[in-house]
Image (cartoon, rainbow, N blue to C red; front, side):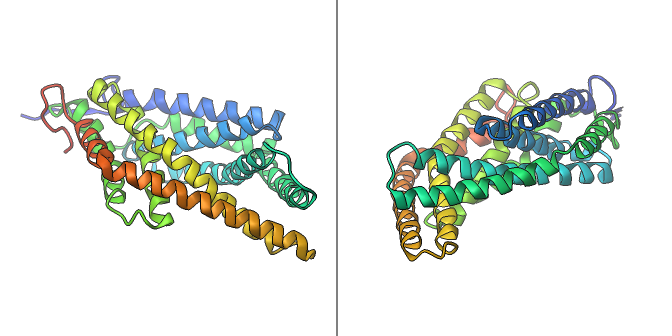
Length: 305
């Protein structure tokens, strides 16, 4: 006869989820505090973006254990912070790249326009991180961590089966994205996004799944992120510079911004060619295999229910 164990038990899913939710919540609050102390520091913006992504992943992976309305309200607030930080991060990466080498007077005007845009975005992020908003976020984080659980799970299946079931949808979305038309920038962006989501989700379940297989899958996903990261930076830079090219009244500045945007587009195409060569030379097959193997038990049997 199948027995059922409430997920609030220390050995059940809630015993896995609750400390991880607390850990990622604390990381987000610490990142917020750092940004409030110095919103001009690019490293703090980067840390905030990562912390918010990691908490979003936990909320999604543990969705079946959490009260729906509480989770949705928290997720909406965290997503708002992450998007605001993401816009700042894209600008920081571009400004760092543009100021690595000497620039002429025209390029300096473009850089000044980008810095003015950064100030506006930083003000927007600061509003989202106001004392009132932080207190609201803190209450929601405390509520979600102490919310207990929704439902139960069959103890005969074990935590590895439960863990794999939580990862499976994210894994499937990544593998579907890997079959997309990677000649298109939007499909490459989707592959990068799905890979990042899968990575953050797998990190939650390393103890319940085969640690060695998960480690190999995580290494493969980090490799993809590194290779697609520069491409994403060039894509964002092209978009930002194109927007600047449409703003200034000075035709000379517009021409310089357009020239800089075209250069970023060339870099994007170059990096895409390099990625696709690596991808089709065996990386796609190898990474797909590692992802599927990450959800096998120690004996090699599938645990994704």
